[in-house]
Length: 91
Image (cartoon, rainbow, N blue to C red):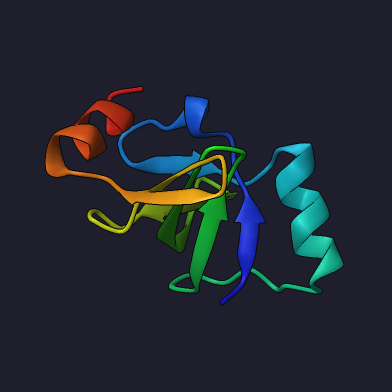
C-alpha cells in the first residue's frame, strides 16, 4: 500500500491535507497519481493510519479510516483504542 507522510496536527474533521512538503515528496518519489477513493497509509514519526484520498475544493486530502490508527513508539506498534482515536481526531 502507498505510504504518504502527513501532518496529523492539521487533522480537521478526519481530513488531513496532502499538500505539505513531506506529502509531496512521498507522492513524487512513488510516482503516485492521486485519485478519489485511493486507499493509502498516512504516517508521521509517531502515528500511522489507513486513509481514503478525497478532493475538496481543488485540494487533495486523506480521510482517516476509523479504527486503523497505530501509534509508533520506539519501534513498537500500539493499536489505538476508540478513546485514543477520538482524542487524535480532536486535534
